[in-house]
Structures are given as C-alpha cells and as structure tokens.
Image (tube, rainbow, N blue to C red; front, side, top):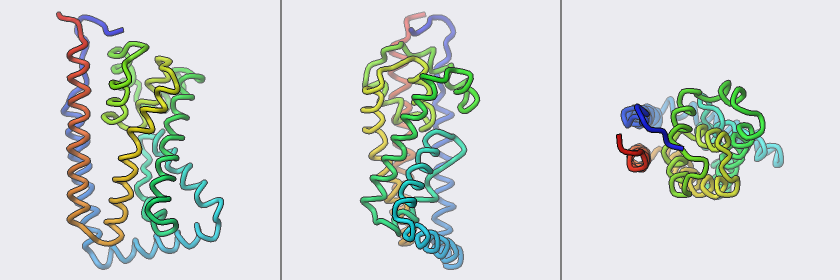
Length: 232
C-alpha cells in the first residue's frame, strides 16, 4: 500500500532528461539521414543484412522477435537498429506486428522472471532503486488505468519486473502491455521508414511528438500518485 511520511515521488526532471536525450538522438539520426555518405553506408549495411534474413525465412523473423524482446527487458539494448532491416525484408505491416510481438514477449518474460525467480534476480537485471521506489507507491491491486500509465510512462524494461514483484494479475498486465506497445511499434516503424526514405522533417516531428507523449504520460502518472498519497 501507499506509505505515509517522506515518500519521494519520482521526479519529472528525469523524464525530461530522457525526452531531451531522445530529441538529441533524433537530431543525430536526422543528420545521418541528411548525409549522402553516412546514409549510403548504413543503407548498404541494412540491405546486406536484409538479404541474409530473406535467405532464412523462418530464422529471420524469429531472431527479429527475440531481439525486440531483449530490448523490452534490458535497458542497454534497443531494437531501433533492426527496424529498418525488418522494413526492407517484410514491409511495414509485418514489421509492426513482429516488433509488437517481440516487445510483448519481452514484457511477459520480464513479468515471469520477477514473479517466479524473485527480487535478487530482478535486481541484477534492472534498477533496484527505481523498482523499489515505484513498488512503495503501488498497492498490490492498482487500477488498470494506472497500470496502463506505467506502461506508457516508464522505460519498457521496468513495468514487467515491477508488476511481477507485486503479483499483479497476469491477464490484466498483458492487456495493458498490448495496448501500450502497439502505438509505439507503429511510431518506431514509421521512424525507421522515414530514415530509410530520408524524410528528415517527418522523422523529427514524430520524435518530438514521442518525447512530448513521454512527458505527458509521466506527468499524468505523477498526478495519479500525488492524488493517492494520504495527507501529511
């Protein structure tokens, strides 16, 4: 349950820093797309990788899903680099579905690791301080809307571990996971497509939109926790 006293809410500044990092990264990627030389080098690499994937029609999609799952479980790993390869190999719709499946699979794995293997294993994978902070703010049966906000606002590797620790009902978690990850999968594939086609303005606009959405979701989550805290 929520605890009284000097319970520190997570800070909006950390999410603003994350959003700023996303914008800066988008500017760097847009600069690469604008450069004939750099974009050509990367495109050649993507095309070569796509050729390897096409030669393995079963292994390629499985590997793509597993890499996407890893990105949903590990803070240091991102699936952004594999999305252009998926677009070249299978097109936009299949890439969205495979990415969504991979992220969902990763979320289910992180929930299962937390639920069945316990805290010490989770703390070796994810941030102990972050998980403990949010666990203190949650009851063991948080409302579905709050869980959906957690999925939208927090780094993708956090909610599964967190909700497994508090033994949140799996099917409710899965529903929130599916709802939250699908629009991000759409946006990520659109970003990858914009990079491949060197459409830098739409790329930057979408990156700004995602950064703003991240801040909004965290602010909404912060308000929900603030309203739930008992008066001092």
